[in-house]
Image 1: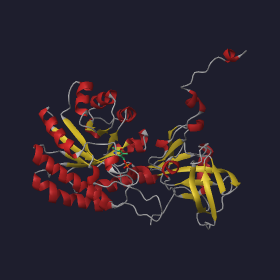
Image 2: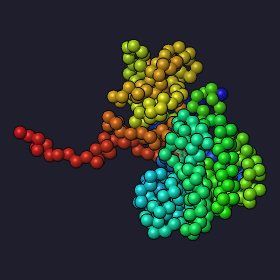
Image 3: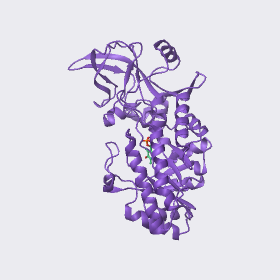
Image 4: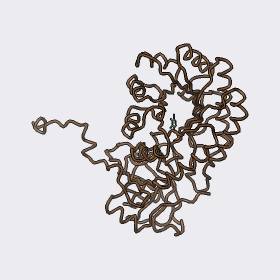
Length: 422
Ligand SMILES: *Cc1c(COP(=O)(O)O)cnc(C)c1O
């Protein structure tokens, strides 16, 4: 069981909404820092550990800065994500560049920043040389285990996933990179997304450790770091339980002793690229009920839409809802809670049992701190909302302005009105 909380009362939230009208995303700095420290503490039992926060989950400079100050690096996969890292002062090996189908310009930028290149394909060695003139001293490769490993619902089956090198290609890649003069190596994989079962993550680690040992046997290359990517789930549903970081860390420690150390790889660093579990539970989307209609179902229309949070519409994802001020009222009504896009999938909840809702009520969507605002889009010309940060001293800082129609129209050229006149 996971208790769904929100840091403010109805009255406090109404006061906040006077300054920052709904909808808005809110993040809790203290909770994010405490979570980061729990991770660092759990994995401190390994020879070396770094979490590279997956920037795409919450690409906001203030959030990145908070995580950087906790010692985290950043995992990037696009030009914008690299530039964001540079702007908050991250560079060198604090950046993991795990991209795919990578444009030349991004390889060039990643090398300018000194980021670790994590290549998605065997042909990318040649692509890097063509784009940047050389190979870096350090290279990482992304492994796709194919039918050897089952994926899960969000990421799918590895053999159907576009990412990574096959098993045969992996051995060839290290041998070729070694011949080409690369000096330090990493090994990466990511096979699941939003997975709450610790055993799944542990199996992935063991699979990767075993592969690192085989790579050493077959090619002579000993990897210096092993990265298991993202994919740690969060308990979106109250009946689910959060992942226990210590269970994973202890099993990784055991896998070091059993697998890596006997092969002379006991000093390799362990890296992850967690995004969702870092900020997800510590962010909320606050929206207001503006309409109610009763047709074949009872609908509550809210002022947020898929523009602010795509996950429910995109993959039927569950986000818990709280009607502020009605936390202990009986959930004796059944609603579809919907946004205003001209798409029937623009629904935050379907046939959800909730307390009676009236227009004007404030509704909190939980666990929107990762892959929330970030995935937003502008269909129907809906501007994306502001982002607010509750600082550790309790004050509120606006960390992203709300989009306005001027932002949306800034890429448009308008023909002179006269040209339309007869
Ligand atoms: C999305 C992604 C992550 C982060 O995944 P989470 O599920 O948010 O932890 C990490 N690495 C890569 C390569 C990704 O694509």
